[in-house]
Image (cartoon, rainbow, N blue to C red; front, side, top):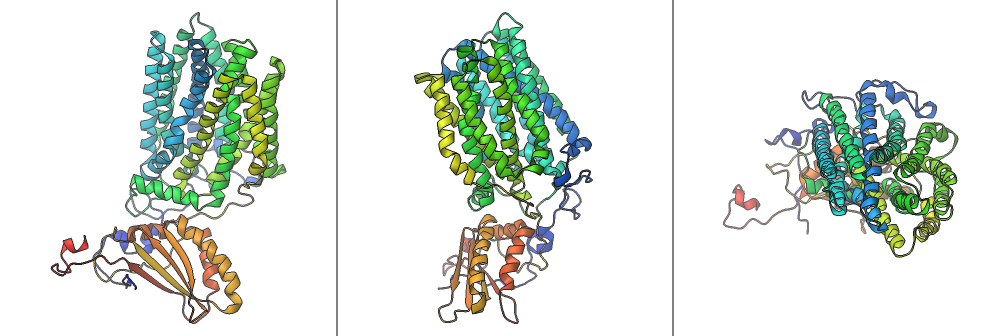
Length: 594
């Protein structure tokens, strides 16, 4: 039985966002409602990716100011990472408790990544970033005071580290999602790499400064406390840059914002039905899960195996940062000479070697040199994966995709740190590092078979519909649903095989953009008649699906329609689920709709 009613065009009194596809599919500025281009609102200043030197984004004042403020703040963060981990090593000799510092830093992203991405896609990103930067400033200030007065304990240190990284987890998707608003699309790979340079300059300088500051005082508590105070102050510069930024979003939906839960569901749905996004997520998890043994156990290696103090640990940590700077600075040239698959494969194989070196070698000079190359391999891998994520998703789901990526990235670090710390606690640091190397080698074939985005990025700019939406003959609520969309194609026998192939590509488009169910059916009485059907939770979700369609999605849809034969285009019917109306109610009674 057909439990729907067809939609017919009408001039019913409905909200403006329900009347025209053209109105709701174009990017709008937040104040004027004027049409704006889908490219970043900055002048293009660099060459195409293939000839880029990698430093063009620094010519854009806003990106440069943000980059400098972020670098200073990252120096403070890495100083705190070193000081905090060393302070924990002073407070306890347990390898597990020391490794749990990495878990406390990574765990918030594991649980909050999707929520952070959803809020960054719904709320105004500039204000969101200011709030969470202020949160982190306050958390570190509290930790500094507790440390300087001698009131810090292993539990307190882990707790405040956890609270600090809640702020980091909630701000990171928004922080990365604003990159396309600051630079032209062709400069995104260079901008992402420069962000990696910023973090790795801090990684090279911060640990050494943190170790030197702690070593400069008789009590580790005093040195660590001053490091925490500096880190707290470093957030002020970032807050100032964000406060002065006059943000103009690339795209502003004309539809009501999604609710948080609905936004998270749509983000998960997109990940589930996007193979090009799943690939970098899997690569990120496999890589960070095993390489986390380096980050989580390096302090134990420095203190117990190499008999080094805080300064020695800072130098080891800084060696990773030096290599990362070299990698980030040369990555643009590497990409021109080698495919991403080769770069990632070599980096993966070297990280296996690094784990074995840390397990078996006791020469500080050899380990320092090995860590420099390890930092190179780390940053080339993570920057390549990050770029693949950013270029694989459209603007409407950008922050949620980055939230999923960060959740996967930090989840690998957190879970790996617990496992390698537990093995080191029950056995030895050597056993933990060798186990990580063996595990990485065993999973290498799976990682290497997972292909990232290659060649030119797809055109993910919003598609501009050329016709208005159909309307209901009677007034209705945007939340009415479910909605069924039925499209009937007439496919000649000679087009049947090609049609079945491309229409199943369209399935992914429908499901990514919001459909909860999709199917293609052949009429038994008329074999040339094929019916595509998909369901949306509500009429508003259907409107959102049209707004989310990209130029690349439309190219797939156009290929499907081109296989249709006949004087008329494919027949499209829009139907909304009919709710029961009890006999005693009038049709226009509001209770009849409940």
